[in-house]
Image (cartoon, rainbow, N blue to C red):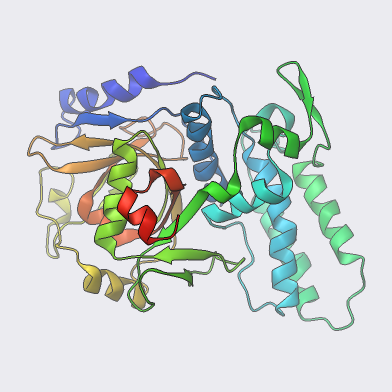
Length: 368
């Protein structure tokens, strides 16, 4: 696997030279990261984004460059998801989506494996396609959730479906001249799940307390530190300026979010669509109240997980995040996008990062 520093540093020059965007970006901070992947025909952005984050953590921790299996997380998480769904009588979310903390939970409970040890079945296309798997799993669990007097066999049957479509979980594997179990590999890589924190910002719950994030994909009822959006933004900036990266959960349904253009902006209401990507536009002023209104009205929803890997400044000195997506490299940013401050503040659902990536005063305030 090839690290792509040269492409990343060259990216803003490419965009400016080809007049593909009305901005000229200069990279100010760039964290180590691995190559862009493609989640293809799956709803598993959560494992691709968080694994990308974990791969950057391995680089930051001096463990070298490793390609960690996304499908291992999917395989070990589905039984948990099905259990919650069936036991709740079908009143919880069941589907391919999850959140970043579900990867951390998978690492805690099951360990992790390299891609070479567990690719997951891809079919003839050579890419992941879970359309049939998703349909089969839904058809399997829905009647179980409505049934009384369940036998003990349904978990075994579920595992049979998952093994057929994804492959059996490796009990041990060889990697770089050594043999590991998934838990031994996690420990050898130095990943400590309790070192990672989840942070959100919604004012309908008290700040500076842990809350259950109320989005459908939070099937496991994970808790998040709830803080004001200005402080959440400051955490992301501080982390990236100090060599950490950030797993980012956000709404990507806005007209100003364009993978093809390699940008995410939040234009003021009434901005002509033809102007959004053809010239610099004035963006909305975002505060806690307007952000909360978007969440309350379902204008802001939990859509997609991504990976923040750097900071850039545009020609006017405005700060942008550099985001690594998991939709392949077929866009103007070759898999990357620039995210404006306004977009981040309005559309962030939550972030995950190492606790040492918190500014000192906020780390103390949150009890880390």
